[in-house]
Length: 308
Image 1 (cartoon, rainbow, N blue to C red):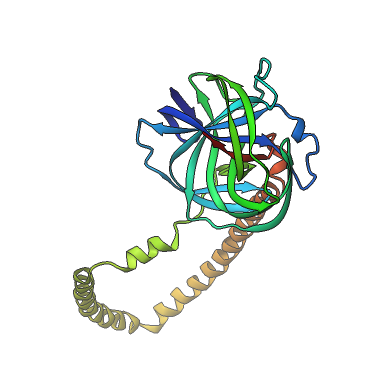
Image 2: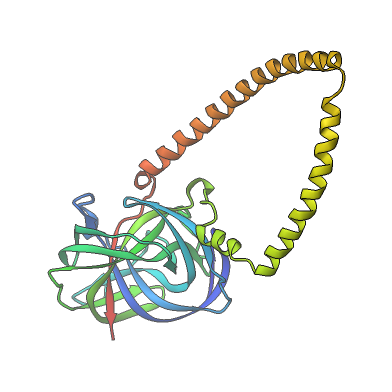
């Protein structure tokens, strides 16, 4: 099948089997109607047929704050799904997008004691770490409803344990039935690279640059010696120039003072303009970080492992 995202372009993938069932969830009493939402997501393991190549320094913003993650490879295709525990579900028309999920590395986040309720029950979970970023994807020309609404999924654990449940599902791949077991992940509505922001290169890049081979150091030392000799010649020439007649120096000094005064005024005006622009940018960024959830129409999903 063909998959196209607004962030990472197009690829093709082979879908294997269902490994997750993600149910709409009410986190900390913020969305009481979520457990009644019919729009579930089935997570199918998917193997990309075109190498992904990874993506570095992706900024993710959600209710937990801001993360910078690296993406390594595609892992799942999340497909909108209708679910029932009593028999095959009735005809289902999805109101959410498909998502392509990528494994994340180089990011840490923990939080304890988060209350989550879905159609399978209520549980208090502890967030262990970020695991995957899921972005809206156009599957075989089906389109994308909201390209800005991604999901950031976190590995969780918690109590009490929810018993295994037999479910019946229906989606674009047909009907299915299987058991779902332990809760694996909590997926939060998120924004990816809001405003096109990217962080600076990481410190590990600087460490790589500092670790250049000793031969390069020797070359730089040799160049430094040559520059030092040339610098001595330039210093002697400069002293000769400074010995010019005092009258010419005074004229130049007067002109320099006038130019400095005018230049200082211009510099202060330029700094004022730059600070004003930067202040506006910071205000806009702060507003973006403070209210990411308000602009994302997706719901929190709690994902359970599919048992075969």
